[in-house]
Image (cartoon, rainbow, N blue to C red; front, side):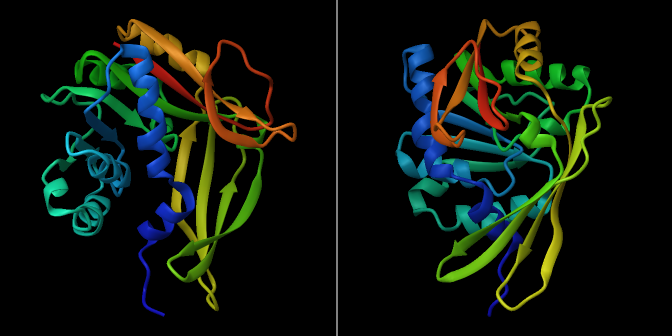
Length: 264
């Protein structure tokens, strides 16, 4: 079996870029009255979302920011290279800290997969929010993906089977002990190839678990005109449906995913 990149395994296990570029921009149009054209993807990693965005429409452009040169090299050499030639020129990958505003302004900026949980201090998240606001066009939107609930912080190891092409793998999402004083928790992703031992701690995270209320208050303090919560609906068994609705109250789900949207 040929060697498979850890980034390809991550994309197959964790991401759903087509859903994000098809579904979330509808809320931008609902909030602003206009369809978005330009995207900035923060903590972009392999930039899969940005590549899907420019592939979707010839009028779409994207800039993807990260500080990890290895991930950015993969983004350029694999995901960008796989795009149709005309689409390649409409996406750029930049090694830059997201705390620094970009000179270019965008219709919407997204931070996905809970990546902003890397910021542990309120002052840093506020600085980030102000940087994003400065990088948005008038009436621009900022989409922040959050996860929470007891099921997001209790110790567990959840294993699922994934497929890359014709090959099947196993992925384990592990949650370690949550610290209620610092509101931080460690997470790990492990992979197992057929006939191989587990590859442990391929990706690791030390996150502060921010609450929706904290994030909304920070966005308003940063100068956003308003915030909207997009809450994932659930089945009668408490399983997420993948459909999000604007909400101002929600049931105490064991584990939940939501988006907080800041409107400039």
